[in-house]
Image (cartoon, rainbow, N blue to C red):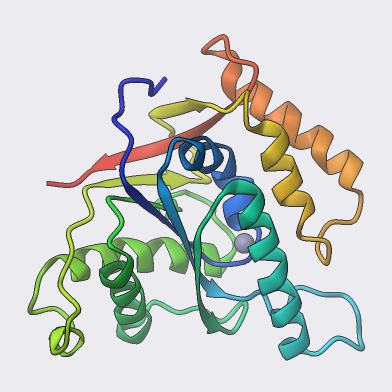
Length: 231
Ligand SMILES: [Zn+2]
């Protein structure tokens, strides 16, 4: 349980697709937003291939899904959204993507970053693996002024992230009590209307998952993270 962790002023969630943040850590983010933490989302793709509708185009879908993510973010209390708009399913570890993530971190200056766990074994989705690596590598790059130094010619300054919480992890070492925000987490997930078929069944599964995550701590509902403290 993480009651003893001091709340940051600013947090950023970096993730592959619209809805990843809502499944992964929106209960904790809602808790923090209520206590005054400024929250930014940085999406690497806008999920422009996530459809079975043969008439849907990637551009139209990305617009729908960005709106859905903004609606979900409003439920949580997120204040700003950065869309990097890479193609869904095609994320690759690259200096270009690392530079874009680095720049988002330097602009928004989060004390804490939430990201997908790139060390998770048997993570099948390539975008989830790459999003995790890009977040980690972007954090390191943002810290030192000689990395992507062309970004620093104007007013932008380098920035050190102090804390990382990895979600979708198989090895959590920190848990937050989301009993008071579980309903909002489920509402946020439900905001992704283009993706959610059986919302009732999904919300039951999410309640059961949050319950099983919290059970070891005597909590009704929890989210677990792998916490990394950076020097
Ligand atoms: Zn995803």
